Length: 114
Length: 112
Image (cartoon, rainbow over the protein chains, first blue to last red):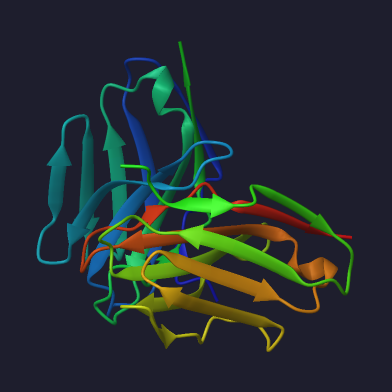
C-alpha cells in the first residue's frame, strides 16, 4: 500500500507559466516532507522541504504548500523554465525523525515547453 | 565537492553471479543510505549506516543482499547470487546529521 502518492505521472506546461505538482500521503504521523528533482541518468537532487508545523515554504521560484487536514502537499514552480523539465519526487520522512529514511512517491515527469 | 561517487555506472551480469556495487560518500557525512529504484516499487530504502554502523536493514529484500561500510569513505552492496528480479538502479546517498540526502548517480544493474 503506497503511503505517498503522486497521482499524475506526467505534466506538460508552457515556459513562463506555473507548474503545480501534487502529492498525497496516508500516514498522519509523517511530519516532514521533501521534494527531489531527478534528471535522466542522475541521482535525485534535493529541491525544497517543509515541516508539518508550517503550511508553506518558499525558495526562489519554488514553493511547497502543505495541507495537513487533507494530507496533501503541492509544489509550485513559477515561472517554469525548460531546465525544470525533470522527474519530481515527493518524499516523506518515515516517522522516525531520520531525514534520510524517506518514503517516496512514484514521481511526476514535468515537461516545460519553450 | 565531488559528490557521492558510485561505481560501476552500469553492470550487466548473468543470473547466479555475485555483484558488488560501490559507494564513496561525501567527505564529512556521517550517514550513508542505499536505495533501489524499480518500475514496480519506485525508490525504496534498503539499508542505512550511521557512523559506519548498520542501523536499519529492514529494507534489504533477502539474505542474498548484504552491505558493509568498513570505513567512513567506502561502502559496498553485494548481491550473491544475483537474480533477474534484482535488475534495478541502485542509489547510494549520504548526509550529515539531519541534512537532506545527497544522492549519487546510481548503478544500473541488469541481471540476465
